[in-house]
Length: 258
Image (cartoon, rainbow, N blue to C red; front, side, top):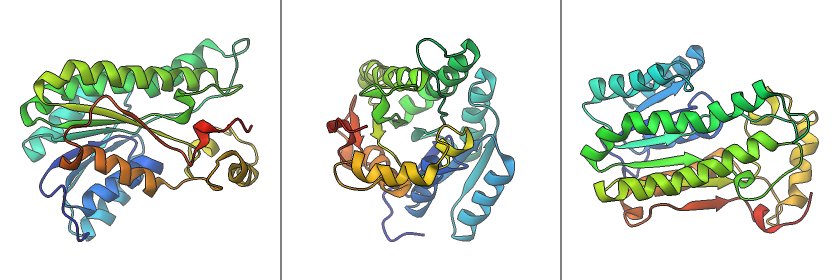
């Protein structure tokens, strides 16, 4: 367990916890004393994460299922509250990427991306809202630099992330009277499996190398860097921060480089 204990005994539900930024968030939260409900589709990876964090002394609940499904989202919240007697924070990190432009994106692909990246956040935040209101908790949504600016051949992904940003602002306004904060982070290119599992980037090594020129700070990011910002937004130190979409992108949103 880590030396800092900002989240000692607090309960945090993290989606997309089997890889990438979701897994980094789950690890970081557990390292700072949180009781973590780790949600995802791949049971074997959830079990491995639970074993890893449990060996370090963390309390972990694994939740397997499809975040696009309404009943699954309700079950995840119910099981988390039943196991840990409450819910203090929600990290909506599950998401997918898909390729295609305005003239050739298939309807099924549009729906897959929208359901994974946007519908999931709507469903899970709605399911968690009563408990978050009771505990005056916080929500952090994983968005993207693609929500702030357009990129070619990524129509559904860019639109879904722009919608996540607006959802974040609307939910923040709705839940603020109840003491619940809602924020989003907008990463640039981060080293994860996101681009490789769908073959969105044929040559991933070249893609990362190009990131040194498209990101003004000269490199791509890490999942751990994003997790640190997520933890700040969940923490008491950000107690007066809500409705923010926070860029963590090495300056990518400022750059015109392609």
